[in-house]
Image 1 (tube, rainbow, N blue to C red):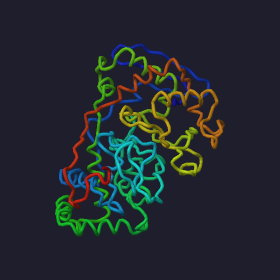
Image 2: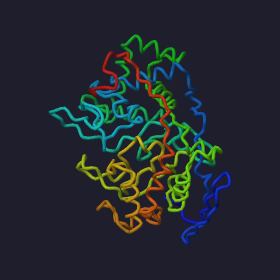
Image 3: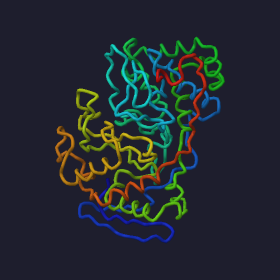
Image 4: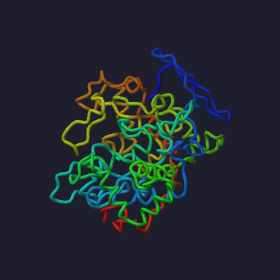
Length: 388
């Protein structure tokens, strides 16, 4: 989705320049508005990184002790082999068993599916980053509806959510105290928290739980894709077709919303994406206008299905959806085309361009990230929860 206006596409290292004009807006965008990811991660001032925090956070991430029924870990829906996401339209959290697309509810069941598609945790250390301007890790936008700021805040919300990790055994206001009580009874966790947060009494508290998880998640980065290499000056990192796909990505309007180093403006947009059938009620978003946050386009090869509802299994289907929007067709009966963001309806996606754009998107993949899974967790429960 592209901000209208005079769009100047500048290829580095002697690539050609082209100008594209629109009568609707008068803004200028260049290739530099996309950008490579930073080589280092920024941490909040009140939560500097340390090896002790990272290792504590890793254990907590994989330990189902954080869930009400002790059956779900953060890693249940964010697994390294699935790019820290999973291959499901929407997730099964509490009262589920099995792994990947084979995951199912245990009968009897009265727990709903998770409301939205499980986004990858990978590169969330860079959420909200822009090509121009400061980056504040403590204000990083999280979730499909931007309801949390920072990984520290985000990390605790799934624990409080009924269908994700809490279950029906505890209320939203009591689950964190229950989890902290469990952790405090495990000597190894007491030691690990004290070492990670020396001077805090008690070291096992709600803030430090979020801090440890966030510190680990900031180590999950994939910031050296071929696109990153190209943007850092290596013109040979992309093929001719991939460069043409990048050209079309900008020309057709994708970069209006998918901008910056994470290829996301981190804003809410109404697109009329069809709802998942896993939930009976329509998902109208946090403001009731069916608007959801622009997702990152990084590592898309590993994070299907796509969109907040997980309704599109392939990138080809995603691109066809935008082609339909430009043709005046909304895919959600609750969202008339007149309510769809004009950044989407003004796009010029054509069927003949789709394969080249997808070739460019493949350059955003980077499989070189930490996939380390602990052999065991301090609680003695199943690593990753009930996925077997």
